Length: 264
Image (tube, rainbow, N blue to C red; front, side, top):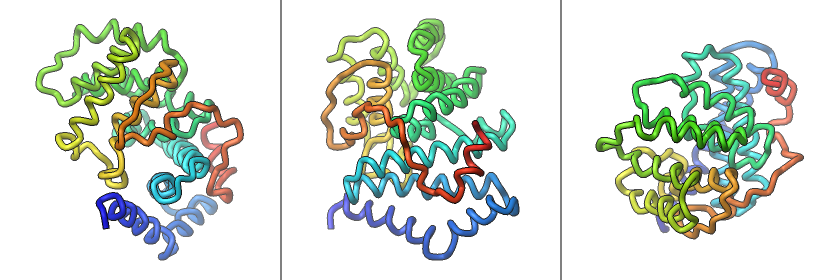
């Protein structure tokens, strides 16, 4: 059994746990009845949706199901954030969490997730490089490309790269706004070359299957209007096709009213 097969089995074991011990059912019942921890139940279903999105692609190559599970994940994230104060949101929602909305290819949920992410990190925090990256992603998800370019120009000369492993990430956004297609492609592939040094930055569901940062940045390039071709075994190329989905399917239909009334 190769590494990819082992990782897919690992993801499937998590899905089986969610489904086999009535874990999901308890979370759904909590949300329908208003009992238990609302944010906790939503958070658990976010994890389940993420696992299903990953499994739908890497096990079944079902791009429609993958997009629908990412749409479901992003919608649950928004419902969860609606229950939190601003300081709580900053601790619970970060740059990588916003990728679900990007991969859903649904413009509405992208704009809403971008509208959560950008304000959270536009205020100076403990990690100015991470804040910069999150603001860029948030603005691009909102479709505010000129604002993202202006934010880059205001910030990039005031951020100390130091020895940060995120310095190459900053280069990607600089290239999105000012670089050639070849330079932008190289900056993303450079992140793939650093996969081994950034394993601790990879999620438990995706380790060994993809480079999450490189894939998310490549997707943001497409959303920003940069139609570059990127081929790498750690980037699922089908996820980069930016074809807007106008009729996404929420994969936990019993929760439609609960989830969407909380963030619309």
